[in-house]
Image (cartoon, one colour):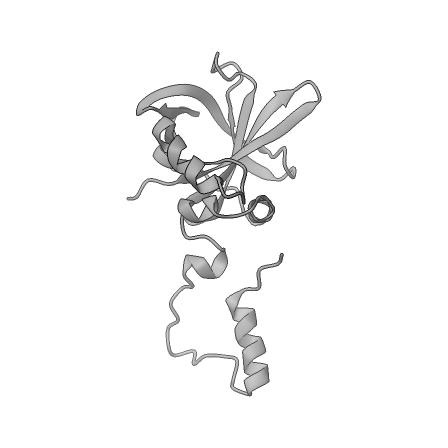
Length: 184
């Protein structure tokens, strides 16, 4: 599925209708809203996408640093199924998000308490080899030493994450998650 920018649709409409495709340069144009650049406006929208849509969105996304502080999170189990949204709501009780620190680490907020630490760094995605923010639990967590997360910004302040398990046969993508940056 390819997303066509609104500007391209405007040019097509102009050609069909016969109106000029360019706006008056003297009139300032407001920046396009987030919905114009991607199919999501927030983490709740990500929970409603299928696996194929999440994968396509992740491929199109760019790596941007995640803001320090508490980033609210939503787990995305079995994307596209009827149980994805209810499961995401239930798991909010267990996992609320991630707290990024300025020392290159982060900690998950579980049951409202900071637990399960990881190192944070820029690295190569296991999904497509492109740059991503990596959160590696190896050597930081006794509960989840074989877990590695990676995230990219899919819309301003909204991050899509992929969680992997290290297995003998190689990394396995086990679930998706979403993060919302702290509001200023």
